[in-house]
Image 1 (cartoon, rainbow, N blue to C red):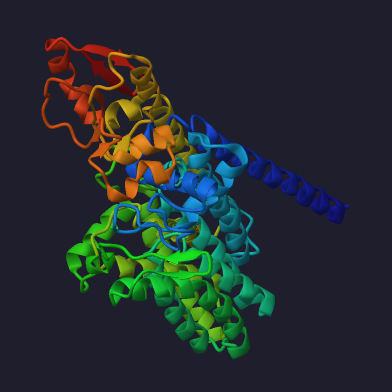
Image 2: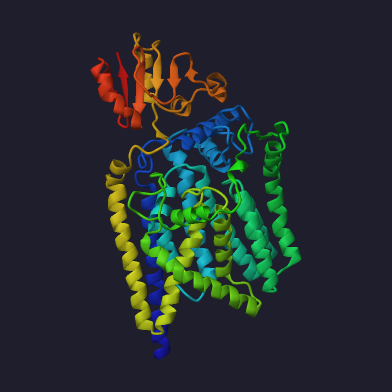
Length: 522
């Protein structure tokens, strides 16, 4: 009889757990897809540049600089990681060009963070059903995870891909199967194509991981060689890119792929370790930064409560490290801790912001969840532990409800707009001008970078010649910041340039609004 009751209780708990995951994934889908094309409004300048290069790759096999299948995009002479552009090119080839597809890779890689984050948590604490569910909750409802999944900043893919990498590392250490080491090597190699900072973060992590597995007596030369091989093969083209730019080699081809040369080599951004950089990194990690597209004003990256849980959870990570070395068995939580330390150490060498830190936030969430587990263990009573869990779950749901009302209800764009570095699709204004005989040959000032014109008109890169970074396109569209009003031009303006609207009206210009931007003509 008692055995039967236990079985029924287990079945009921299983159904409750699956129902909780179902609600979680539904909430996740809504927060990532709802108003994806309109929130945030417009396109980030890097988003516009990447999407136009992706469209060029899909239709012509070259980017906007006419480089054939580049290993690393030149972007605005300083470079841009290629994975996002390749994913967009594939989507554009199949479905055509639109803002939904520009942002879809960000949303999909956010799903990778959720799925593989939960799977990694299940391996870290296989006996604890709450731990992975709580990590899934944090990934679903915390502001940074939501906002980074809603626009096409190439570097933000590092979060999802590195989560996949960490999962396979943990699985490989636990299962000791060569197949898992192979998957870890592939995932680690692909991570290098998401963001240039991973070139440093991944090697630092691998060095720390090697020291750890040697200390825990879980090192296998054969398995590490299996992991290293695909990672090295995938890294090779990127190593060539570094050589071309560091040693002033000529740009070269590797089959159809271009080993690109930038006029600005951004390795100069790295300096020696500075305490001020460490402080700035912690502020970006636990608080926010000045870029309103990264974080909503007044909100913390993972809410303020998370940093206190993290401070408790870090002791759990250190304890796991000590115990795994003592027991000579690698622990999953230590892998997360080492990844966290690797990125934080990297950020001590350069000026940080939230998107530069993006790869660290899964580790932050795991250690915050560990903080709840530590508190539950300290309670030493099942009922009190459940109450502690209930309090934190309710707290995050309440914070999420407040953030959702602010972010999706319109207050965010009212307070944060105009978003720095964001512009608009101006195709409607250009079509209007081209349809008017008295306006089509008149000079037009566009208050933003030329990539917004390119992403709006989708002209051939061979005809547009945007690789020359022209001030004037087609002899009549002048791109760049509008600093003062001059007679004789049409004006297409958005963001801060809309401050000139009254002056234009006062000079007899006719205004035509297109939502987020406006056209003024005489």
